[in-house]
Image (cartoon, rainbow, N blue to C red; front, side, top):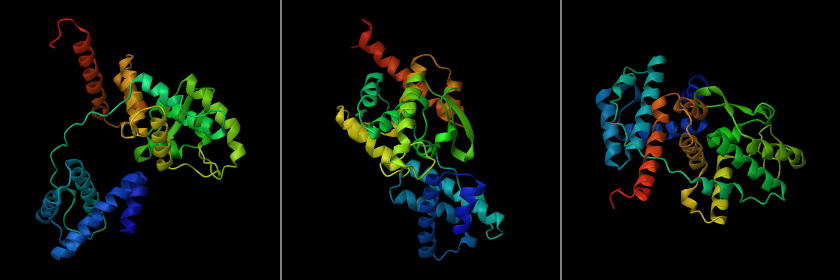
Length: 290
């Protein structure tokens, strides 16, 4: 398992979060194989399908099954490469595509309320205003936000350099609002005696984790009267994309900024945009159906 973990992280360049999920899925496979007295080298299309069906029987959601299937393809490909298994990735029957779920978003006024929530008379309040402004201005994934080094921010140019999924580097622009608060934070950051090169650190100079950002954002949501379960760093990422499209941005440009490898992933935001236009029409047009 350790060799496979190294393969996923180093050779495949997958994120820590994805690697952790795949290993969790493979522990389920190991438990099932032990119960069925099946060794990894004996896995074939029939046995792999039996395992996936068993997970369906356990009530796994379609998205969980899709990730499980992806983990199995990676594992069987690795086993074949190592000469330890007869079956390869083709042994995994591709599951039906999970139903498209429109991402939750926030209105522009809700985002404004969130951004104004931190107490900017304190260093940590300035920090929180800065990272929220940056998150909304750039559409970063929360893991990317947590890992971005201070030296990857180019304030004069209005760009940041980020290492995304698959170790793919991209440049993302941000606006004057984010620039103002990042400059303010960078003046205060040395006073916390950072123990890391990460842009955002805690009160003891430690790097902030994904969980830190989640907790902080939900706390600010409650402060401004937004339901805790309606807000997350990913929801701000969705708001970034949706609001750009609302104001006429090109879909390909949004794809590049979000770091989506496939345009079809970004196209979900056009559905959000269209749904909002439909709701506006139904509410405002005098000849719309009641």
